[in-house]
Amino acid sequence: MIILEVDLGERSYPILIGEGLLGRADVFDRHVTARDLLIVTNTTVGPLYAPALREALPRRRVVECVLPDGESHKTLSTVARIIDVLVANRFGRDCAVIALGGGVVGDMAGFAAACYQRGVAYVQVPTTLLAQVDSSVGGKTGVNHPGGKNLIGAFHQPVAVIADTATLESLPPRELRAGLAEVIKYGLICDRGFFDWIESNLDALLARDPEALAYAIHRSCAIKAAIVGRDERERGDRALLNLGHTFGHAIESATGYAKWLHGEAVGAGLLMAATMSRECGLMSDADVKRLAALLERAGLPTEAREVEAAAAFEHMRIDKKVQAGRIRLVLMRGIGESFVTAQYDDGALRRTLEAHFG
Image 1: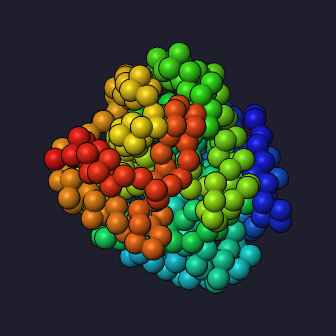
Image 2: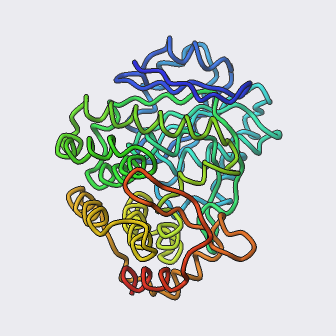
């Protein structure tokens, strides 16, 4: 078992990474003190892993809330269902919510925990690669709005992240590829050596080699934990974690959160950010082609022709990073050298949108 720490003072918490953690009572006894527990999961993950999780929680009062699966259900009304279960079972402020599932479940369970009685404890038990390397860490919780991705939410840190790598064995290939987009993102942000490693080990990752996956999860979480530790509420460096996301969120919003997985949209968004960086004279054509080749090898999309460029731009205009009406973007000076800026040529953005959207 690998243990990392997200250093946030009194809100610090561990990230535990290892095989078979989900069924270990000693792990939950050490990190989850509440007697009353609500397991929030969905119709896909619940039947697979809720029984093992329940066995790891003896001598507790455990209630389950099973939600429909899919990004299209990441709404305020679904979060209200979670809160209804908490109220119906008379859970107090000393309860804890356990998010068992991927990023959608984690975001909604965390948001419900942030809202219920002005904040109760919650634990992330991510079961997808994307959630294990990214969304379970950092305390961002929330839901989508028809007008934009994750526009409603709160910062609410978990008390622990328990990532059982064995759950990745049941992950559909498409979900695995979507998670790899976030792994690639971390190399692009600040670690060219990690990007090199991903290129060399991509086949092993796609084949679900346990050692390769464990390293990818560990390195991704280490990078994110360091950034979140410096900037919990995204006032500075943390915005780097949104590399590719402004473009990707526009894809998801424009298609109604129904056609694209989040990681797929991020994958396309990464190449759009690289194209934009090249259009601004920041990134070499060789680095852009290198990224495109890696995304294609990973089976990730690199364009979104079903979305009109003008529609994508309108969705980007209500992104959370917009300041004073100006879209801020995460761009790159090269692989491993990202930065946040609102100072760019509008023509470069227009050419980028035209190159990747309809």
